[in-house]
Structure formats: C-alpha cells, structure tokens
Length: 206
Ligand code: URA
Image (tube, rainbow, N blue to C red; front, side):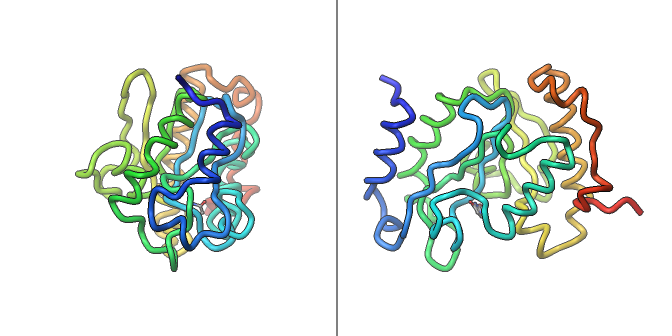
C-alpha cells in the first residue's frame, strides 16, 4: 500500500537504514507543491539543509531559486527533494549502499507527487534515476521518457557556482524544461509569464 505524506515523513524522520543517520541533525524530506508537474532531485542535504531540515536552502539552493525565477517559477510551484535524506559527512558523495537504502523513499515521493517532468541536478541523481553510465557533461540536456515521465539531467547548481562556464548550458536546459512544461501544458501559468533571465541575473544577457 502507498504511504501517505505524513507516514512517509515519519518513516524518514525515524530512519536508521544506513550510516548517514548517525551523523545527521535533521532528515530532509523535500518541499514544494506535493502534486507538482515538475520535480527536482538533488544529491543530498548540505550543512544548512541538515541544520534546517529543508532542501536546497544554502548557496546552491539560492541559485536554484534564481534559476526557477528565470523560467517564471517559484519553489512553491515545484517539488524539490534529494536522493539521500541525510547529510553525508563533509558533503561527500553518498555511497552506493546509502543511495540504495534511500531509493524507496524517493520512489514513494515520486508516486505521491506524480510529476510529469523530473530534473536530475547533477550526476548522483542522474545515475540513480537514469543509469550508472550517465555522464553529466556528455548527457545533460537530453530527454528520456520513462513510464510516462520525462527525465532530464542538468548540472547541479553548486557546479555552476564553481564554474561560470556551466551557466550557459544550464540556462539552455532550464529553457528546455520550460518548453517541455508548455508542450505538456503542465503549467498554464508559464504561458503568461515571459522568462525574466536578464532580471534575475541567473544568466546575464551580454
Ligand atoms: N545540494 C543538494 O544536492 N541538495 C540540497 O538539498 C542542498 C545542496
């Protein structure tokens, strides 16, 4: 039987399925519209997410907010979560058994949200959801249709903070996401709001 949101939240909060539970402060379930057409999946909580229990609230999250604004969306209109729900120490990449221990929660979230489009932010979610052979630099921006859901992998916003050159391809990916939602007519509000990239500063028009 499918878990409800409160059941899932309680299961995750009490989870001790892997070693990450021993060092966490808070679990990070996810947040946003529980029936969003567009779902973002990141890698795992960082320091500020571990402290607050909320996904993508640190510097990478602030950039994600601006990237969303650039396609006329807010974080309340999408659903944002991670592959692992507990912070890996020192923000290391989650190990295979840690990812595997958490995958059931991500599947349960996806079953509840029933998004039309899932965006993998960086290589950890891309590999977890699309396959171990995905290489983010080579495969970002490509659409995959799996069981009626469109998947796209793009760079993690933290990668954009480290490397300005990744902003242009990431902006192209976000435009493709906007266009896919319009094509699926999954977000009528988008049709009225022109992209505001030049105002948000996500991708300076030069
Ligand atoms: N990076 C992630 O992958 N997820 C977060 O929630 C924050 C930073």
